Image (cartoon, rainbow, N blue to C red; front, side, top):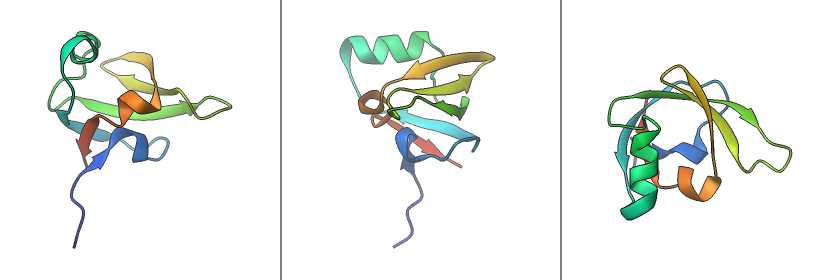
Length: 78
């Protein structure tokens, strides 16, 4: 079986992907949408913290940090 979609926390550094879906509700969904993580937006992991949590992502011209538990809720496609 071929896996077509990954979650954001599975993406390697400097690999550009596109947001397919946010799999969350409530405040966390609103926060992610406010940061520009909308369907079709490109996002690239660019930095890992020493503990690998959080990771820094480049999205819409801005560098943002997203915790792994939140990145796991974001489905992406290549």
